[in-house]
Image (cartoon, rainbow, N blue to C red; front, side):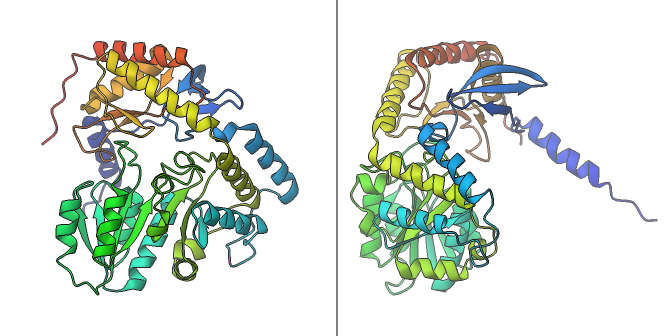
Length: 410
């Protein structure tokens, strides 16, 4: 007798498992209000209300900067909405070529390549790089982003995972291999969930000592750090010593897209072999033009970065004064630690429903189980009043959820 497989039960059980473990994701529907960042409209079952967004990666509010939005409007009128194809087939617009020149200049590299997102940039560039090197060893920080992990998995390279920012372990691992074997060290400058900063100088020294290439992900740093916003590598004046710098246009620059910058030769190899570049539609020219304008703006304006840093320091002080636990660091990312998935979600709900503050809970697998948190990113347009109200609301939400216990499933 043939027993019919019930596919729906398998799907339903997988969702129920997430709910039981307290990590089922709810995607809140919001509508941003141009000129009113960080305010937005929250659509909750057809009932709308104003909220303050504290978890946006639009770190500097550039997506609503008049200079940037006017550039987008004018560019659409001039060039339309779509690119018309891949880079190889009609999509190689003058706007995207100009954007790549601007990115190369920003990072003081010979060449840049633009992808549809930062995730695609990492996945495509890393997998291609490792395949071309052949029989390579890749050394990856244990807290590297999912896009980096995916890029490594798509290659045949042997991988060595070193403890986060642990240079002693990195050197212990790398010295096992011959000096003349291909080696790549991949790491980040600002780690998105803890907000700490990678030891770029130390990693570069090890790379030089053991004849390894360096690949740094600066997505949470570009636009934010350095004299012109080129990231932590610029701030440390070490860009020349890094082989490949990867970044995004979708965070501090307020637009969309990802990129790598490197030598002409390395970029030519990635351009010629990476399927994530060759077989996908190019960024629309209007979007590329707008990204270029945002880059140029932040190269010459430090107002946004200064205000943002001031607000970060103010919020950290108020959290400390009110005994609210957070991971202190030297970046703009403030992780308020809850360490309980059920409680983390409940605190997020209380903040949103009762106080109008939107901070999405961060649960496993984005962070390790037991380290659940609220990831706060104050921007230049948050006010002192907003920061004081958020601190008060957090204190109330923590108090209201003191009773919540959670035992990790076996």
